[in-house]
Image (cartoon, rainbow, N blue to C red):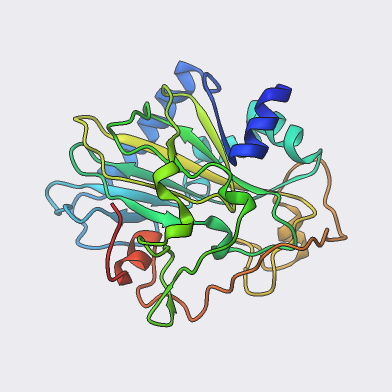
Length: 289
């Protein structure tokens, strides 16, 4: 499915954009389901297990910044674990055996849309090797004005940076870290129905939405089946080997972890503010975006 040039781009940059993966009908269904979840926020005064509310939310004017683990909330979201084009792209990168992990659906509201500070996903869930990536599904177009994901090319081959502040994990890097080279970041843009694939170690973040339209972006975490989570990274929803193996979305379970020399980072002590990454990052003394 992927061309040699696309594989090379992923390996060199740490991310690729694939346009036209979802059909207009698939995009329309995702939008309708997402609108139904936003409607459920009416009357709510705080976050719950499903909805993470925007800072500007009120019970009478619901505004949601994240649907938590959408694959557990509606079959329309869950179907993308096995979307044939997504699976074909991942098997081109890693081989035939692919395991799912967790998901989220981030929403940047028009004229606001919460920023996500620079970070590396890898620090949240260390594994025995780093064949891990997030697939982003553009439910709306991602433009340079509406807060698209920004990645620092090649940073997945570099060091891990501190994601701690005052001795506690905060899920974000120092906004003044000179070795991170934020100035080199490139946007991942594309029309609705495009997908992104970004490596778990690539430095990325996103600014606020400065446009007059919303930007909704669903992220699915995948890993090669021989990348096993370390003890402190509990697989999402998996309490035993049967549940863990049920997370295979292509190929077969692999019972022998592939162990590679990869940098590890322990996200302990836990963030002072628990919840989504937006809550974790509130501990930062200063911000980039």
